[in-house]
Length: 309
Ligand code: AHZ
Image (tube, rainbow, N blue to C red):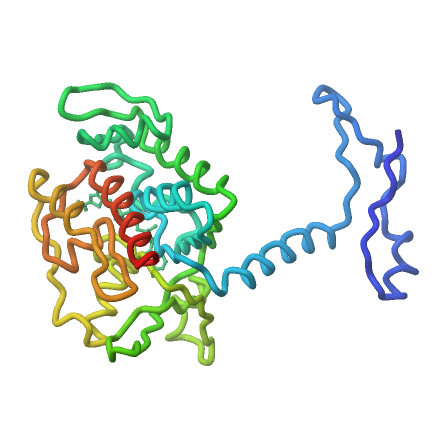
C-alpha cells in the first residue's frame, strides 16, 4: 500500500507551499519489506531525521544536567562500573561521559594490537555474568577477541533504562564545592564537546557546560592525552599533594593494588581502573583485564555506599 507522505510539523508557510514541489514521486513511497529485489524504504523528510535526534539528545542532556552518578570514561573499568551500578540500583540516574567518539578505551584489543583478552581469576565471574565465552587456562581465562567483551558490555550497559552515555564529550574540570564542614567536595563535572575541548588554544570564548551529581566516578585511565584527568586535576586544585605516578609493570602486584585501592579518594570522587595507578603510584599490569572489571564493580559499590551514607 502507498504510504502517506511524512508529516513534518512546521509553521513556515513558505516551507509548506514549496514542500510538494520538492518531494519525490509518491509512487516511490511504497514500503517493500522484501529484502530481495525491489527494496524500498518508508518515506521520510530530512527534517524528521534531524528532529528525531535533536529532540532525544537534548531532552536527555536537559534531564541529566542533574544526575545521581557521573562516570567519566567508558573503558573496561568505567563500563564494568556502569553495568554493576545500574543493574544493582535501577533507581539511580547513571550518566557516562566518554571523550572519544568510540566508547571502550583500550579494551578493543588484548595487548600489542593482538585480539585475545586475558582475564585473571576470579574476575572470570564477571564474564559469566555477562555471558561472554572464554577458554579456561587454569589461573586465567582468555576471551577469543577483546571486542567480544567490550561490545557485549557496551550493549548491556546501553540497554539499561537508567543509563545514558554521551560520547565525544570530555570532562574538562570538576565542580568542587566547600561543604558545611568546610571540606572540599566534588559535586559534579564540567563538560564540553571533545572537539571543542581540544581547541581551547586556537579559539576563544568556548565556555563549557556542567552536570551536577553527588558522586563522580573517575575512570579515565593512566596518563595520556586525556588520561588520569581527575588525578591530575586534584593536584592542580591543591587537593592532592602530588601524583603517585604509575610504576613499572608487575602483574602480581598491580592487579590487587588497583582493586584494593579503589575508593572515594576525596569526598564525592570515587576513582577506578588505571587512573588509580597515577594517583597512588601503583604498578601497571599490562594486558590483563580482570582488575579493571573488579575495580569497576568495587567503584560501583563504593558509589552506593557514599550515596547511602
Ligand atoms: O577516552 C578515554 C577512555 O575511553 C576516557 N577519558 C579519558 N579522559 C577523559 C575525560 N573525559 C571523558 N577527561 C575521558 N572521558 O576514559 C577512558 C579510559 O579507558 P582506558 O581503557 O584507558 O582505562 P581503564 O582504566 O578503563 O583500562 C585500562 C586498561 C589497561 S592499561 C594497562 C597498562 O597500561 O598496563 N593495562 C590495562 C588492563
